[in-house]
Image 1 (cartoon, rainbow, N blue to C red):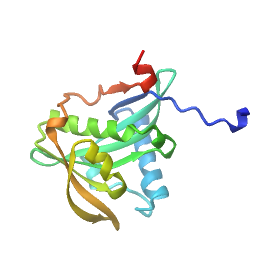
Image 2 (image 1 turned 30 degrees about the horizontal axis):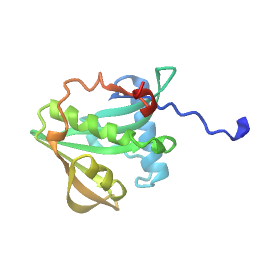
Image 3 (image 1 turned 120 degrees about the vertical axis):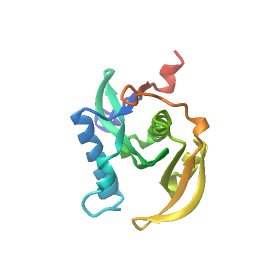
Image 4 (image 1 turned 60 degrees about the vertical axis):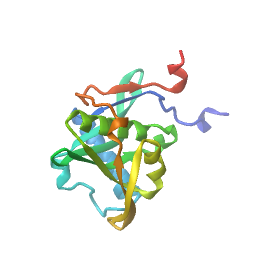
Length: 182
């Protein structure tokens, strides 16, 4: 295989945490635009809405030489009503979807963060192609709905499956399965 035909290197290690730095927040906005406006064409020009003003954006950040590099996944969470939280705008960069675990890690951070902030009930409107992933992560389907003209499933997380974390800005680093066995 020649160098020109080689796939671009994708680090198997990621930082999963709340986005706080200006470059992280910009990366979250850019990724959501790429996924929901350009790729899926759910929104004509912008996917941002009033929830962004109150939501906590979470990010999966790729690493390069063990340093934070770029935002390759995101989800936002907010308290919809007392003790009821909601996650939305889950997105993973197309280049990183084959990694297979970024969405799950973001979902875990979302529910654990809300649980750490007093959440009794965590809900999400999940695109139909992602329902099985959520089921594997201890979520229950509630009802089929349509959101922005796209079929979704309203789903609820099992809070017992998600231990509370007090500070999502600390987050955690995920290692590739090969590196975890060392």
